[in-house]
Picture 1 (cartoon, helix red, strand yellow):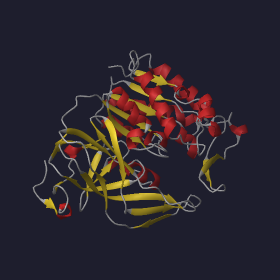
Picture 2 (cartoon, rainbow, N blue to C red):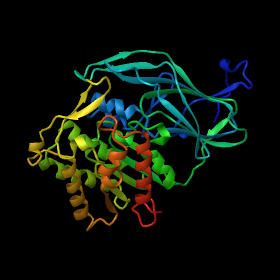
Picture 3 (cartoon, rainbow, N blue to C red):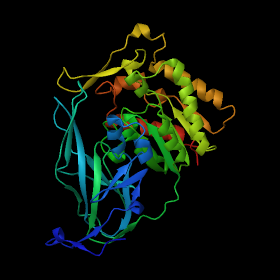
Picture 4 (cartoon, rainbow, N blue to C red):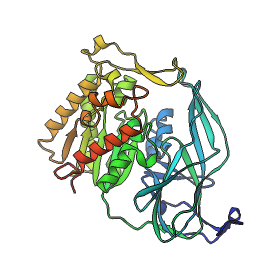
Length: 398
């Protein structure tokens, strides 16, 4: 698998670096790899889907490789990944922290690192304007790893898009052997993409996948879980042994959908997924607790007045009984839809999001920006999801 060439930067180090191109055999969790002039760029939507609605928010989210990792076997004690990242910051706020890369060996997180350089995308939340400043290639480095053969996963950041240029190691690598584990395909919002998780292997879906012993494909798209038909078709066409859908919060955030449309849209989504996965266990997860939108319609809006980023609900609570969506209404409707369909679809299941994070949890683990969970809450949600989905008798019980 490794190229025969040596990297000149390895001179003077304990062992020269072997340069290995990043090929599809090394990548897990991506829907597609786009070839670039110097390497590859992971995508979580296929090219045909990305052209159907060229939305900047969705384009940014799907190119941020949440759940994507390089998987290989090696005796290397030093690993370097050359990347060109696109980092995101917001006008008026402090610059972004560098994206986190997690090194997992034999299923255990052993190190975290970041890359310097990269492009910088600045977004003005008040106007929607985008400004892109180009930057330099960076290197993510891990060293002093234990000797001997190792099964390695290098998880890519969920906060920034990355172009993968080269993998450099001080010993040859080969693609990871097939694990024969079931593939879990998950779709959701920024909460599923990662929001404020500690690192890419610590998002709640990644932690739940580790607990359940499955391989994760994470199609959580920040701000973009909007029942887009092309996303449903992507789920339909992707290989999967298990499927879950976190539905609701982004529909309220954007105030895009009315009650008349919501039910038929959910039915259409489930119909499309069932066209490709007629008997695959399919779990519909309703929204987690978010007090600003429990009984208040959207849209949500950023609030920078306190010096940091917080979100507020702009909807009128008095309009909650009209045709507008709230999280409490969505939960009841999703439960009804699944209950109705499950009479003829025994592999369809429902999980109330309040069982993962409810009002009582918010008192103990409040949402820092009123919308997104913090790192500890990701761990809490993962533990509860695994206990309900992967346990004996659960919808994902092996």
